Image (cartoon, rainbow over all chains, first blue to last red; front, side, top):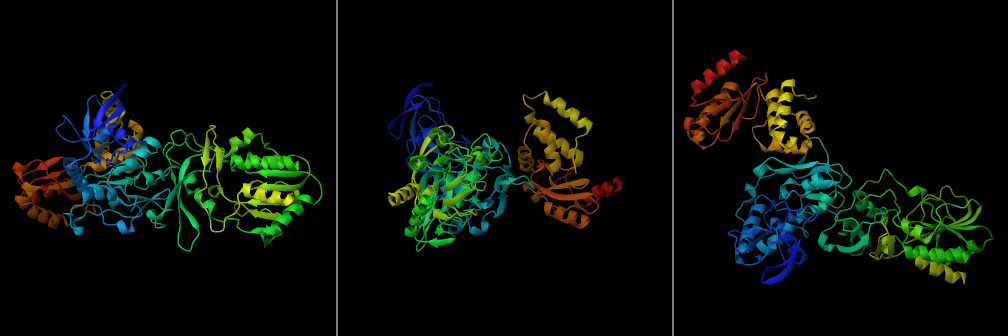
Length: 463
Length: 160
């Protein structure tokens, strides 16, 4: 394939001959409206919104199904093409309900955006003349379908037929009665189903989990990395601090990264945001009673110095590489054995061949690289310092200090709260060896210290 | 409930397969065979067709719902399809419908309790020159009058 120059809106662009025109428009942020096209799903050409004028062609053409040719001259703006788009949009909106005030998609809805860009016409359709469909259908897999809001772009049906190949969804019927549906008596059932909620350009598919929780214009989207497994899928954390309340995460959304996860994430990863705020360990607990930080640090020092014996430090393989390095140095200083037992992390039931890895610990590769051992010493343990490692049941130690993000049943002499991944920052190495930086996203009103903050505070006391 | 094509139909399907590069092309002929065999297309039939021609059931279901001539619910032995489009409407479809309703005691879309008759209204049957028209199963009945309808239904009732 050769690179050629084409003219779009009087500007010259270089593109690969034979590639899709719409890809070039999107790449250069040239405004073009579209519902059905998606980079992961390819061209379908059914929504007709991405009309452009091409010199030499009698009628406007859809950019999503136009291949780039030599000496092409394209116009994406102008009275003529805006008029065409307005007319098509009016057709899309004929039977669309006026639901926006109660629709979860409002604020990130393509129909709303395009209406503001190209529509702004007076409606010719009376509310009473609209064709009605079913409005609240539980498709399964936490997805709710509102058939009236649908523009029949077929992104969801193409996702189930081309990407997951589970074929649950299809457009049935014809004309005004056409709608997205599952087979009678069947449910949407695949571990990636909730991606169709992101794919849906309008409010027809909404997440049961996110519905009515928050208006999207209040949300801040911050880039992050999913900690659900060693795949390290790129995500956006959508969060908001309501007045008088604490910072709250409302949803995870996939973030495009062609090297790691493409456009999608699994449903389990998507819903794993709950672990970041449910059942959190917030208090410092000394012998079963909550205490102040000074008291806790004194207890920490006392536990460290209360007699000699083997010290074992456990580190969770979900901690950031920087945190693991710091713990490693600390362990050397104390003469302790550092370990991160892995056996409990392998989960074949979870794994598949796409985005779900059987290694559930997100930074297991870093454990390997840092040479941290993954089994436990046989000797008698005098003091166990646990950095959020979940597998402490089988370990018998005289004294236990436990840093925890979430509350656990296992007893410990001293429990110290720990920041979760969204409240800390660092690097993760995924199972393919790709290093990804994960910034701090959430600052709670009463933040739990990160591993590094604890290390500094504890060592100040020791010295 | 399960669905199986008759031996005859299976042979037809096999013969048709050789005509196309892919068996996936056979969804329409298979749907017709299923409908003629059982008078309607059940979900089991759709699953069976899917297995036969290597298509997911959803793809077959989409096709079956697109065409109004496929019945997805059971219909009576005699499926009366009265044309409701322009020419027939102008030439007395309303009167014919009233007569059929009174005679059979059915509203459009209903089937008689003995399973003999189903009454539906359909779009243009393409026989405008002989309006009003109805189609019973595969047979057209043209230039209808209430008297003619009585004669037709009488003969059908005798036959059944």
